[in-house]
Length: 160
Length: 292
Image (cartoon, rainbow over all chains, first blue to last red; front, side, top):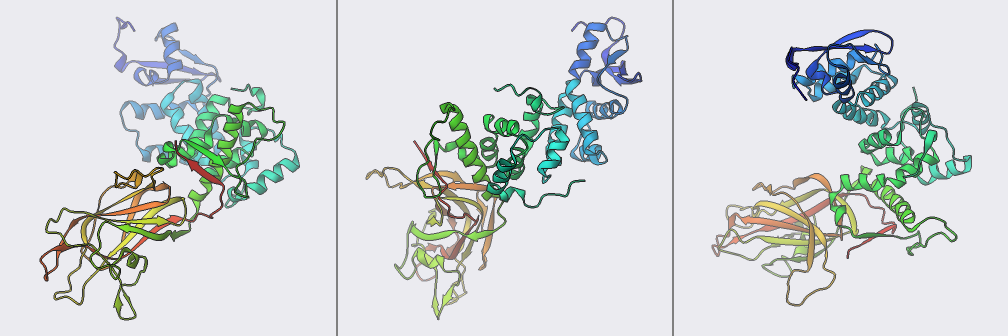
């Protein structure tokens, strides 16, 4: 990619506009980690406010926070644990979808693992509700499945 | 891959869901995922997720050439009559059944000693009083008689010894092995005939035995070396990860002799007992593996 004549990428900030109209700043080097954003910068230039129609003001600051840490190489297990500690399952879902849309690979990988961890010992009904899936087994099929796999239905957490 | 359209989820597509499912590391969670809906069950099967999870948990499985599924009577299963599925699809469904059933045993918290019998020792000083069979008995003294295995004496400390055992089941998941060296109170100074370090191998009997080769076994796993203490107690050696032993053969390799016997000036290793802890295997003849 050709270097901009006017400034170097390391200290430049990019303006991002969320789907609900709010504007956030991010360092260009952090923006680079989000391939969708980088592609938009390549197309529109880095002096323009980049529109992100599918990302909203609730989640973008969190994403920016993550990548701010990433560019300084400070992402540790403790940081990641702290990052998701107070998020409920729906909030993680929203972040996950945003990371996917932004093609922010590192965050996406981390959140995939976090969602998988959250599914641990959750009931089938909870998983259906969380992912918005219809149960298309007949009652007979379902009770047969559960009976055959009774061992995997022990120790299930109560649904919240 | 089948197009699942909107049935899949109201916010996940097959690619993003595959990402999440591959992060599941508990077989029970994967089984429950496949109970969510037909589409999800098909997705788990078609992507071989149960097998992949087992391979991640037990890399030793990668050596298995094929798996034959037996029904409850121990008879090889046949394809459903009138099944419209392709051979590939049938194989994927078989893999799913076998590997999701198999994975449940990894979760068992019950650990039991699974050494069924002693096969052979690399050497024995006085047979049969000091044979490897004595190590199946945990106590070092039975009704006034000492119970231990003794190697033959060597002047070179680097001559190793091996104790080979048959496990209770052809398919075991091994977590920990315990060894107790013997302290000879009947000798001056009560020497302890331990070894400097120990290593464990697991494997199976060779399919065809060649008269010229004295190696009867194929080893599919070799543990790291563990230092042994020169102490008369049951020493625990916990494997870094639980290991799948296919074939039911365990070998204890005692490396480097330490204790010299005053009487003849030779170095020996003497062992009271060997215990091998695995997750319980129910003994159900559900799965047999065959190597090419």
